[in-house]
Image (cartoon, rainbow, N blue to C red; front, side, top):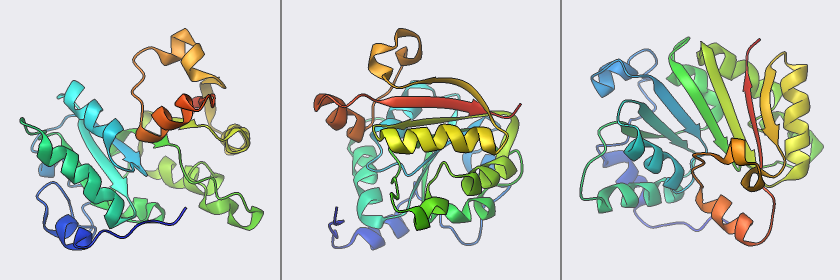
Length: 215
């Protein structure tokens, strides 16, 4: 799918008070940025921001950071934020490539990672680009607190099978998983849907989810 360019998106992202620049790298300074020591939860590849904005609204005692690679996508999340009557001081955004994640967060700085409907990168030569690959799991291991967890949702069954295998191969523990989230009462409890999740589930696609942590 071709990404539609939005005129002025780059400038809007660069100047918005909720966006933190990638350089200089803010690793180790996020609690100073937020002005508190609340746990930090991040969503990598947040799209238009529905998921993370909803979480930030529901949980003011958690600091949320949405990461998105494209200005023209991130600007939609900023529009959602600006349209609110009440601010969300516990929500920040950063435009960056996820491969640089270890320059943005210090060791143990992140308590929870969300990966929602990530690009499947279906070609074998692109395996390492998948956000659930062993390559990325090594990066997450460097920034995630010892008790931290990763939650991953997708409607792509092949990517989900790959992700389960990669997690086990990389030495992570699969705490729970389902191949039909919306019909799994336990795992679906409190579920917050993304824009893609609403679209795919309306089409009848089952949603897969796994939760992993270190042994």
